Image (cartoon, rainbow, N blue to C red):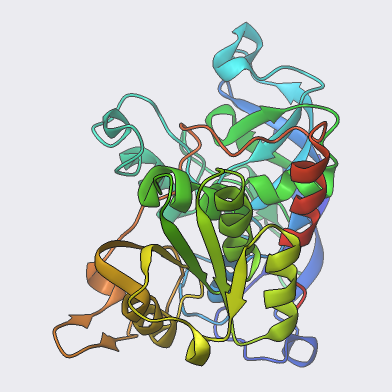
Length: 345
């Protein structure tokens, strides 16, 4: 079938993107879903820092590629094995797409989310789906034949339709608005997972979030919902600190005004060396630091006692194999507050 998609042909585009125009809107061929795959009609998609990192070449991926990994939509066709009930995905379901598919059989999947899925990580790096191969193709104007197009993290949500492995999907309730559901696939999965799966704050502890974009706001929202945990939002932008208060933070501060050495758990969600250094200084003795930001591969953070580089560090705080924060919009506080997790700065 023919779909419309936002296509990236080359890396290295510089900001402002309204001038460099890294993406082109193209007619793309989409093959039918394989046995373990489904066809999803996209309803909403978010632009994540990971997409921008592919565009500017900070985190290169194979091209040409249809970007987008934070999406939600309706299942309109299922593969033969999915029709038999694979992962509970059925025709007509509203689904959230996740950036980390899990095969459920490898050594990584056996760690309950501590390590990533081995074949899932490999397929993401190759620009294929979990079962192998690509379902996208494109005919450049200068060529007569079709050129294979890579998938972004098994999703490629910047399109009207996507073929996705059922193991990259999570079914959600119909009462969750699509624009909110899309955020569950990356921002909430990552920020909420950093709190629940990695930071694991205990009653009476103090938690700080450094960097109040979509991921950081999701961490604030999740931590604020735990009850007896004090939550502080840290960001240089006053409007973001105000939004963190709106989402449930008990306090907020600019980085230079934050109380150093005072927090039991710190979530770093900005993805810069300076933010990591700030997060480290916020920690109380014996505290826990969780970093889920996406810095440049050559970024280096320094302290008197250590040198940190993202090339040697990995944090898997997010996994679709573990529960997300409560996702039903029947909870007016949680459902309404998630609308504030989309950063527009």
